[in-house]
Each structure stands twice: as structure tokens, then as C-alpha cells.
Length: 414
Image (tube, rainbow, N blue to C red):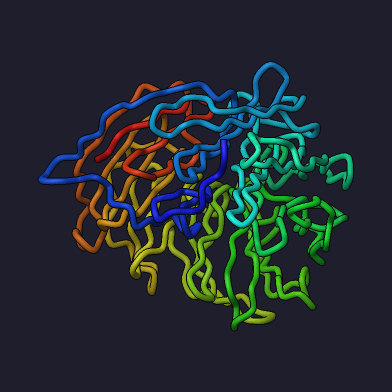
């Protein structure tokens, strides 16, 4: 199959068109109803890798039968257009703890519209590029454990050791593919996206964190990547002559090495959050050499990366949350019935789509429409096989919903 150019309705990054959890596409809510209808479902192998949508193609990654498999599916029918495979274990070679909660790849793919390349990262460090314009032909592949020997994540505080292998999504920036590798060779590395050759490594040498992935931001006009390492929020410079140098850092170490939510960025501000020993969300103002705490609020997210939208902050973790971005004040929360797993999308009609727990799908008014109280518009409890760690995707009037066992469902919302 051939890759299509990016369209307004695409979901080419695991957090949407602009990698911020928001989309111009409406939720589908109309005249007091949310007409959610099942379209198709399929199995994509074990793993919490989130789906991407480009044109009428869906891409995701899973593990079964001793292989990682890249899937290209037709979005309207679920038809399998092509697959690409390589031998891979279901766990990373340093895996420790919680094996009953995860199996297979957790890292979401990354898509490059300039080349049509799809980049994947398996739990055991297999980093690869696939040509979506040539039925998934492999362009290059390398193993990060074999090349850079990143250590097992150390035990933190009172918790037992946890190492889930490689979890953070690669990120395309210009000619580079940014990947959190971790360890003495460098926490963040940049690879030439067309050849796989390493271009630079960050001065930061922390072990990798267990987060969703690096996030692009600009600090005083300088392009940077914000990364939750094992030890801190690391803001890494991406300007050509100083790439890899540290712009700013803020200490933030979470028990179990589980700062799972990615940083959320707006202008030169960053939100970081985790549960366990922190149990908080923190707003930081980033400048060269400094990361200043603006506020810290006793609300937290276990998995869901917060969405910053029109001066408010939203996420789903145990319950729906809405905070004032300027002050950290809680504007409203929903009932505590959603579990730890979750992702949250702000749709173009100012409504929140939340995918939670083991298959709870919610539609909620944003504070633009309900400023003082949580207002649930609809809830559908789907029968999934496991926790919904993968991020939901909204594209072309369809919701694509996956769980950690690889069960993938498509719902029509138009």
C-alpha cells in the first residue's frame, strides 16, 4: 500500500495531530446523543503500543509467537494490508517486576510524512524504520541494547526494582529520529532518520524513564525536547550547534521508576505528574539553565498525559480532572470509578473523549462548556481483555481503541 500525505483528520503521533492530545476533529456528539457504533475489531498481538492513523491507514505494533509485528490496516474495514516482522522476545533483556501487567512493545510508532517512514521500537530495543510506501519494506534496523548496553533501571526508594524495557516513543524532528536510550552512552540520542546512523547523544546520562516519549518545545526560541528520565525532567537542546546539551533540568524521581505520563508542554511551561511518592502535578517555567516551579497541586496521573487546552488542564486517572493551568486550582473532578489506565482527547467541539480502565469510554464537557462542574454526556463500557494502556486515536469519524493484549476496536462516532 502507499502512504498518503497528512490530512486534517490524521492521527500521525500517539498524542494526535500536534502531539498534544487535541484535535480539530469533532467528537460526533449531536442533538444530545453520541452515536457510537462498532465497526470492526482485530487482534494485533501483545503490547501497549498506541495506534497511529495516516489517511486511510492505521499502524500499530504487537508481539506474538516470538516476533514483533508491524501492522498496516485499512481504517474503514480493519483489513490487513501488510505486516512486517522480526524475531523478538515479549520482554526486554533487563526486565524486572510487573510482568503480569505488561507483555510486548509499549512504545508507540512514529511517522514521518516527508519520507513515509514508520519508526518502531520494541521492548528489547529493536529500533527500525519501515517504508510505508513500499508495503512496509525494512529500511534499517538496529538493537539499542547491543549497541549501547543501557543498564537495568535501578531500584528507587522503598519500591522493588522495575524495568519494562524500552517504552518511550521515538520522535521525528527534522532529519533526526529522537530516541530515549539511557545510560552512559547518553539518555537521549538522535539518529539520521533515513540511515539509522547516530548523529549525537545528550550530555545527560540518566537511565531511561518509563514514560510515553519525548515532547518538542521551544525555550526562548530554541527548539528542545522535554524528557522524563529516571531521575528528572530533562530539557535537551536541539539547535544544531548545541544539540544534546542541557537547557534545563528539574529533579523528579518516582518510585518504581514510574513517571509514566509524558511531560505536557505549552510555550515555555511544562507539566509533570506521577503518583506513588509524588502524588502531584507540577507546573514548571523553563528558561536557559533554570526550571522554576510555578505551582504544585495534590492531584496526579498514573498513566494519562495531561492535555493543556484553552487555559485548562485535563486528564483521566481514577477520575476525570480539570485544573486551571495558571493557578493549579481544581475546577472540577468526576466520580472515582475509572481506574489507573487512561488517555484523554480534547475534540474540536470542546468535548473530552476519555478511554479508561479496562474499556470505559466517556464523553465529557470541557470547562469551555461546563466551567464549574463535571458533566458526563455519555459512557460506554466495552468488553476489553485488559487494561487500556494504549492511547486512543480519533480520526475520520472513527475512534480506534486498544488494550494491552492487542485487542483493537474501531467505533464509528459520526
